[in-house]
Length: 194
Image 1 (cartoon, rainbow, N blue to C red):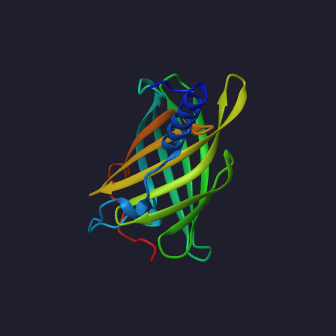
Image 2: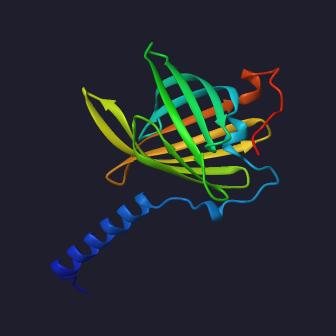
């Protein structure tokens, strides 16, 4: 049986479309297992938190390491958490990001920061939270906007974070972070917002 050139081209085009569709597909919050522990951003990040992270290239190779000192302040009137993140990278670079995170209806959050395009959208379920946003990062003297599919999972007192970075639907890197709230503030009280 001979395949016509047109059929062959159609098959190739279909394969590319399917590949691109799979590259863009993401996990959904409703598909993850529910745990007994709830992750509430406004409670976990209240006060001081310490984080350690790794930036990976698209092939999974570590390219940078960093630490973050985070201070969270809750405004009950505005229902907003201000997170000041001070980054220090292994190459000596230092930077700061200030998030303003608003608690919306049940299980939903919005967030803004100077290097985030528009508004980050967050949704939580059980011990997990998923953020979707575009982050502007410096790259070769320019600014590059990358889309982040950012997942956080709380297990006991440790928060684990995996963010996949994409550009034009293609995976360009990944960030893995662990947060430890109680290691950063051992004598902090349990006064959390409600």
